[in-house]
Length: 336
Image 1 (tube, rainbow, N blue to C red):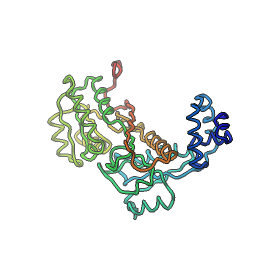
Image 2: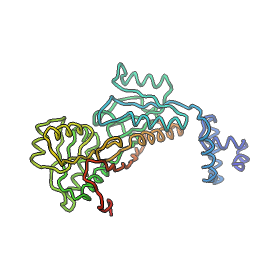
Image 3: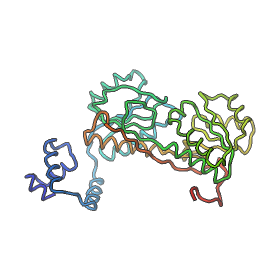
Image 4: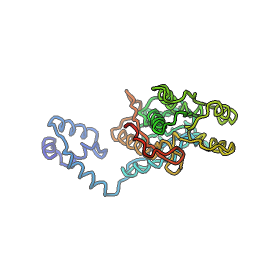
């Protein structure tokens, strides 16, 4: 850095700020110093950089800016509170704050939200999971650094962060296979199925067709809870395991209790560590934190508007053993 500073005719601190794209320097100075550093083939030492980052992390973060976390209302299968908490945790560590904006709540229309963001000089936007599949709303997107969580926001296309629903369902089926459970039934809401781009159903179908281990039980996709339709499907196919989502889970449990059925096993595609139900933990807190990092990186680069090539970051979930699926004791580990 001293060498770069000597050639650029600036202090070493100026070089450090320019290489970090710090907004305290003018854009012209940042570009000139970075150009000289590139011409001199400057590369930071990774261990020194790590030490500096550690030292800075121990200091109180200076407030930089506010990021908007936009949702479209509450939904049982969309726990935006955890996404929001994760985003706030990471943002605060970098000196940013995250404010929640719920479209449709009170008088918050798209036009009013856009006016508020501009009046408050908010340039970072995280679009949280929305209640309906393929939803969209309009803002002056060219003014914002935007990242979208999950598939529910249909367009325009931005960089996106999603849970790997396809891999999650395949893991569920593999866990059933490990336990030699052949009769597996899938129950999803039509909206929930669309909200995940039908990836759960696709993975379920692939696992059913692979080597014909699983019984050919058709998935049941309902617009809403229909006890008669579910009862007819259950009695016809007699699944030993019902794979469902948070949207239907309690209703299925109530139905099983009323029918006094024993031995029916349950798996949740969106399980929680606080619940005894086995399934996939999608970790919305971590997803929200990653979304905040991506937005902050965009804001630092002044990267606003529509990306030329939108990217999707996929996050794997974690299997939760729970107590609603037959134990896998003394069975080989998944993938072995």
